[in-house]
Image (tube, rainbow, N blue to C red; front, side, top):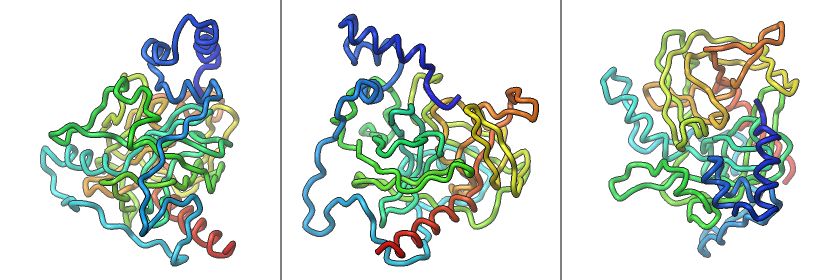
Length: 312
């Protein structure tokens, strides 16, 4: 499933246009974020302008200083020890890198890859051919736990952690896309890409924003089943992916796509991609999800920086 069911979408729009429901009421009744519904209606969703900064004003088009990405350092590096709270610490650290994406195609997830150039990675099938997206970073309570209730983010276009993004690179055959942000809210940092590929049996952790859980910033845990160098995946909508992937036991639902998949050290081993994969007969495959390997994400990152350097 690549997009929201068109019948449900038409029903929502009909109710709003007939004034039977407001956009806020529709968001609460159907469980979709109000900004997404407003995108369907063609409304302008520009968030409030970022505070003026004499040092580094917001820009849309980055100017990388080097053709080689600088590996970011996470806040509070995590150990590789096997303790009961490893998953919790991985989750809490990764929250400061994870975002919800809203566009005309639907909603999905993504993660900060490069703060210097304001780049966020996501799945191609989340943005599809959309030029612009709205990126919502999480907000936190006074005890630093995340606010997960979708109702809090209804009307999120006025929230301080909502920013505009422009899709600057899309690679359909890898199911990858790169988004350049207007700005990055305070307190968020880039992820670290794992230096080595995941191994079968390794514990992995994911964060996503699937509506089935009636909440955002949802944690999932699982294991790596196998890794493949050039795996072919068939998705709905005739999208065929050829990429290095990690096959996992992580549950993958609509809205999770594009989110981070991490190891016990909090490093990215992949980007959530697999949603309703199909076998060679065209039938849906159950209890299997795929993550586009971090080596593909790194290759996309490096490719963009080379392209941007040449264009200058």
